[in-house]
View 1: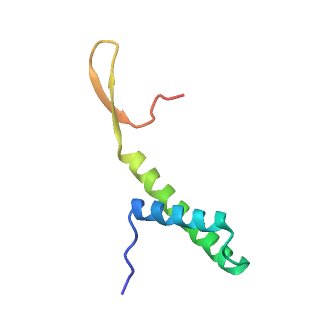
View 2: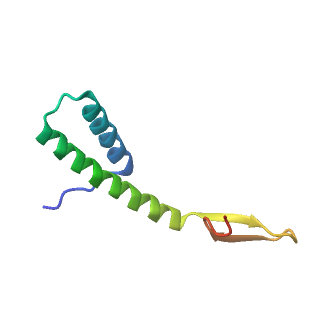
Length: 78
């Protein structure tokens, strides 16, 4: 049975928990390394989800003649 992929919010909560644990210094080296690896995987997953979301977000732009057009988020930004 495949495991359910956590939501973005669940991933962020777990990442915050990992950071708190690592900052506390309460874990040994092996446990800390495992937590670090889990954190890296969570960051990668969150980044992928944000990239996907950015691709779907559309931005309305008002043209000089008053017309409205839809463009991909980020188009025309410097």
